[in-house]
Image 1 (cartoon, rainbow, N blue to C red):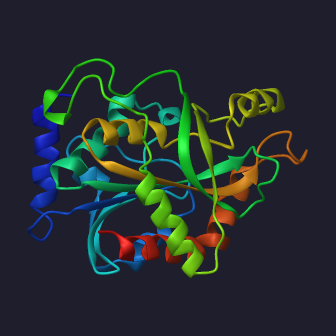
Image 2 (cartoon, rainbow, N blue to C red):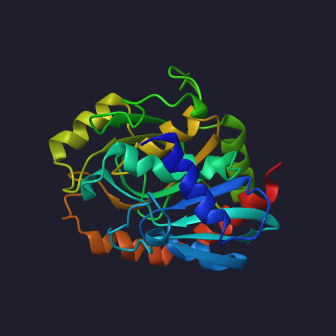
Length: 273
């Protein structure tokens, strides 16, 4: 992707939205897209109307960019993301993140549906991502270097901002919700993992596994955003309970826990500086 392509996408979005910058971005994962309906004075732009954006084909992903207000803050909200397993390149998957940066986003909240690896976790738990393991087979910033989006080599020691993680726990406590915290392991998909793979991931220190998020976080950190990641544990990973896995279970848990997740994210946004 050339820098002019990012500029063209940002300008196309600006032409459809009210003026001013948007300091906060939210990416909504599988089954969590209804949070976007809580935005006030929202305007919607389908991904297909934005040059350079690809269309999201994953179940439960509406594939549109919303601009509005949440808890009194101006927010750009991606209702659905792109995945490597859909056949998109890492650059295509992370294209929207860099466009968000051009639109003023400095803080990014990323949500996903994940499988629980930690044996103390239960379906319906929410995990604050403390760190991640990238087993997707690549890095979205490999290839053409665009200095406009930051340094070529940058620190990932605190990919998920400690201050934002603390804020998430504070907001959750105010709602009577206890959050988990742990390491997210990202894999390509789309097949679910084998029990042997899950045992290996657990040995590596992973607490949850999913098929998204990490490329976006790398791109966001590369261009200077601070990031908060939240995983909704929608199923226990292969071999943890012996139950068969299904995509419908993921979406059903997302629907069941949607209001709790919506309230949590709104509570976090309301506490942001």
